[in-house]
Length: 294
Image (tube, rainbow, N blue to C red; front, side):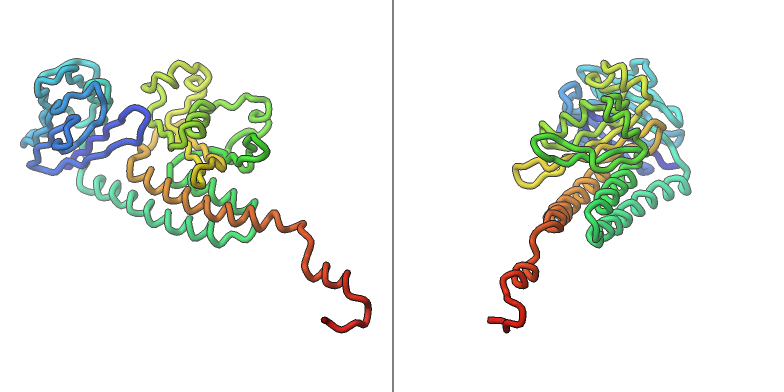
């Protein structure tokens, strides 16, 4: 059996770590740990996982804020095949897989990387600006594993919804969107991606009754940046459980968003020329009939 530990740092992408047979994995805030959790509630060397014949044993290494397994504080425990850990304030998901399941999960990640390249080419090949917007949104949905979302583009000091998928446009107009407006505002203001894999465990989201009631489980919001200018953002979320949005996924999403931003800039520039005066028209208007070109 193989095992995987997924750490869910607050307001950040998930950190998955595959655990090999015979391995000893130290977890903590120190850069020398095998799994680094940059959270103030986590001790420098907080805990360790040790492979044994019977499974994986978790040990608290005299941490300041303790180790919990499925809600109960422990000093040392042989972990069940599937459980939730809490190291300080960081929640972690532990699960064991047979070789076939583990290979399938790894293959899925490789497929996502290949799909990212295809989606980037598709955006680059777009010939119409509105189609390009839909392609960018669809790409973010696929790479994040989300089911609905929308794209904002800056215009006249505000942001306009220029593309959407699975979202009630009329609800957006009425201000009744059931996703996280706060995540969008943070992405636009802080000019950085916002990733949440467990809405219920994020204090700033758990306090928003409308978001919790909507059943949203995971979300991502990517700002579209051009140097020091915010051109817009892409928001996506999902209600059901699924594979977490990991640090690797976020790298793919950011690379895709950066490339998409360049093509959107080019597409917007070309689109703005549609109604511009044509040079051939100007020349014809200045040339008397029958006069040769000068």
